[in-house]
Length: 629
View 1 (cartoon, rainbow, N blue to C red):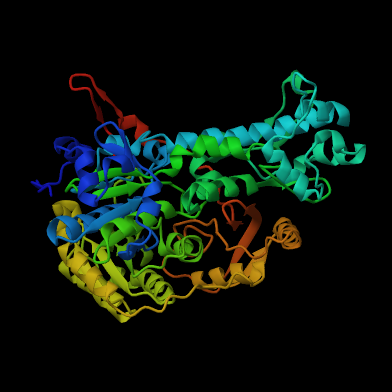
View 2 (tube, helix red, strand yellow):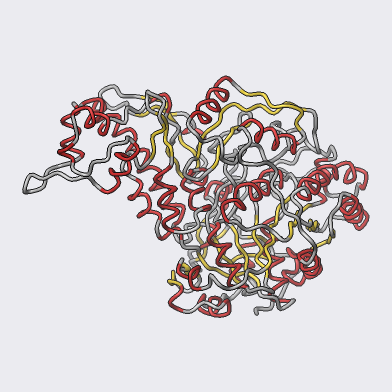
């Protein structure tokens, strides 16, 4: 394993990453137990791991499964990715345990916006961080292409149905070959079965059956599918399409989401195999017909094409940490506007590869109220896996904010309150940590608190947090200095995590799938501290429609601000007794969940006054990227 030479003060993330010498990814793969036929190289630092490894290792035992979550963060982030990587480096490079890290691919939205990349930080990073934070192996580009192909298919189908007769549509959808014979594309047979038409020869369809087959009759007002791009662009939140004269007045209002909020990203993250992904993609509901029937990607005939675009993206990317421990990077849904976890297939692979005594460390996005809740109730249901330990990352800085400290704003200097000791302010904010601990313990899993130490933290402040964590039921609370010292700084945390994985567990979900939609939403709201849930008229109508369509048995993926338990980002600490407003409920049927939008949370972020991109450039004397964080 690589040994770090840590400097003080800690250099910038990119300076540390560029100063290290990565080993060839072949070595990382070999040390993990992979053969050359198990992966395909993408240069010398990345490899796509083939899904066949799952069959090859299906009879091997799983290792221990650790999920890293956090308290409600400041806009600066509290080092959850850094902790995930540092813990893995400690386990592998310092304690000699077989370990694999499973994390998400970062979106270019935050990379060029406010937060920066997600490779970790300091001496706990995935490298090369430039490749990690930018295009990597193109998975997000594949999602964008697939998502927008489906969007184009929707509007095109509406256009053609609006300008052609039944017979003309039939002739074009089932064109005659050179001998004059017509046939159905394989995907069309699924639609015929859905319509109750048990015929395989197009010529046998009656005029009435032809009409039902060719006309999806999509209601433009009920389309829920939106276009995406991987850029923070607030001016695309609401747009009008079809304004060219060639579209013959078929305009409609729609909008863009960020690519990582696409249902296709969720499908990628939750699929367990290529056939499962193909089925999920085809089952995605894009809206309803004017008769109220759900319309799917396979109804549009595009499910197979989406799977082709996504086929290679389903293979996780293998990379390495600064201390040469293996990292699976796969999928990248946000936790506030999506389900916020890396892929099921990466976790499944990693758990087999590390073996019975090994550990897999994965990360759930943002605070435990959203990322870890969705890990438990959505991801674990999809994978059939359950965690052995939850790590909650906390910082003195964030707890001071939750205790009533001044606002923390990206791009502005921290107030003096965050740079000087104030134990009372820290204690006041520990209510946020305490609720997260209690919520996670409710799943029947031991909790370890990782206190990510900053240079300005005093011993008394750190001790106050440790005491509050233990009083709230944590199995351990450990100060960790992995940012400054890499795995060496997280050894105590790693020891505590190993001990926690040996404890008794009694895993249980927060709600049962057969409960009504509102009951599941309200169970999650109760965990936030809400006294009641208020539904808009639109949300009420959507819940009624999904129930009638048979989608009420799906789990819930709440889209909510990450900065508070409530819908009000300024409500810090552990607010209670509030009303949680549900403005809309979308259906991600292919991914397998319903998607309530809480308050006014946008599904594509905007750029700040001074985005990160001001600092990013190329040093032409070295050919290296500068300013990436």
